[in-house]
Length: 231
Image (cartoon, rainbow, N blue to C red; front, side):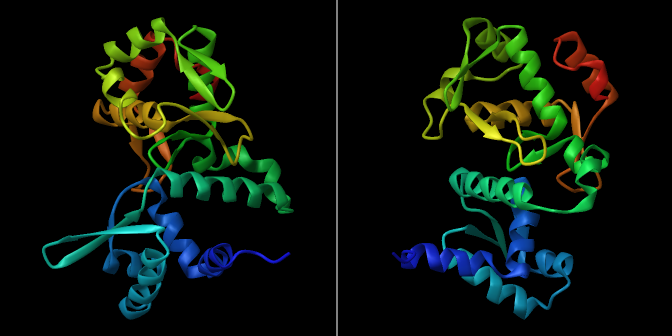
């Protein structure tokens, strides 16, 4: 048996180190211009354009023209979830000697996983949501309880609106550093967006790594979602 042509093509696209780096840079859910990606990757604009064309043609990226620029982003949540699964596989097979120091890396402490919260912070929040009966495990996703709907409503999250969307409402997303699940899906994205909007979390130096602001710590502690040992 041989691999299907489509799987082979995707493997060839992902197998290029520069294209893999571009996907990693876009994995925080934001859109970047071709020139920004070229500078960040240390390649020429012409080389970046070639790589971006292949990623777009493969359906991994979407492009949005704006003025004189074209902005690229991960195509959708399904692509993001597939990339996260590959990161889990890569970490599982890694033989790097510094694996024991995983918790010293800010990216592993707290980061965005596409458009939701991952790392130790994401795991801790889910643990607290479950401990307080806001969430329940339900096979490959989480079930938001009636109490949980009240919490989300208090945070300004329109639960029914996102439940009616095309994206899965919740998803148990396997964290590639912690090897446990954090909250993904439409609810995970809405929760993260709310924390950003309220300035309870911020990016570190414009990367995927996150820190909880002093106000965020106060408010998350008030809600019982911020254990002391995660600070």
